[in-house]
Length: 250
Length: 174
Image 1 (tube, each protein chain N blue to C red):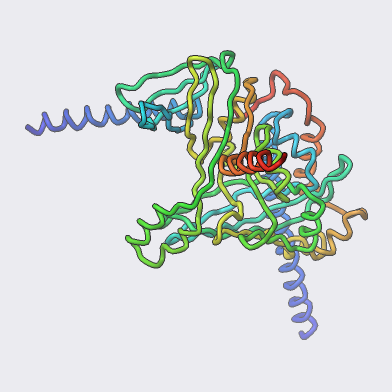
Image 2 (image 1 turned 30 degrees about the horizontal axis):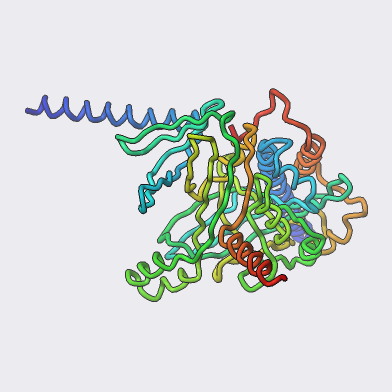
């Protein structure tokens, strides 16, 4: 009888673990799919556009689909989850899961809004911060995150010179100008490691996963959608848009 | 009396439906960019609310006033477009909020407001626009994709400082 109870308990534990893993895999797959959609919206700005030019130069691309901004009594909180892939020599790394947290002040009393964000890591230094899980942007830090340029010029050159990170925000597929930059005292955001998700999918904590990116890592096919989208955009980048290609900015 | 009232309500409902569907159709078809058209009248500078839209190969600037004009600028006639911005603390809004809600509004003194300017150089049709911050970059991108020669000249204040410094350096040098 004791053996029966032990076996039953073992069965319960194993099935609970399996169901948690499959739930995480579904969540991760949904996140990868949404991120792929967002990056395709980004690419629809034009394959020879300024944003796609910087996409090609970026050291890593992180996408946070559906960041939620909540306003309560002049304060603002932004939270969400995303995915990042490192870029080198036209190769895109295994996608790594991340989380986002931001704060600000605002004249609004109450409100809620959702938007998608694409972050372009422009410097080697920013990649080191990313690997260490030390991506904090606040008013006191010398690090700068700025809205990504859409046209060329002196202002654009200055932005790229100053910013470690540039970003583009989208609302229902349209490019919008939601400002996350750490340009005022109460404005801050951080990009964090999503250890729970990375452990569940890759059996590794995020730091270890970044360290092992050069080795061959088994990636579930459901998550590969994000990397596939990046590869497609890279291949098209720099070429003038085809006649049947949809450009958002019409 | 009841019949008359019902008719009036029905007519109002139909009117509302027409208004909503018209604006819905407009919103579906094209993106509207809200802006202010800056004009100079002697010493006074006026800001007139306008709506900018892109219709084929033309930029349409429509006044929001009933008596206002509509300006159509073909992209081919635009020589250059210069984008600049200014990023300054919002002291007025913060002071008003502090007076209204008290100490809770103090953080607003540390916040900034960004103003975006677009100088469209198209001969006689040249205009200066102050764009709203919510979707101005989409307009810049649209103009670039239409082949307009558009430049980002960056922060106005920084540019002014730079010009002053350059001038001072020039004056100092023998």
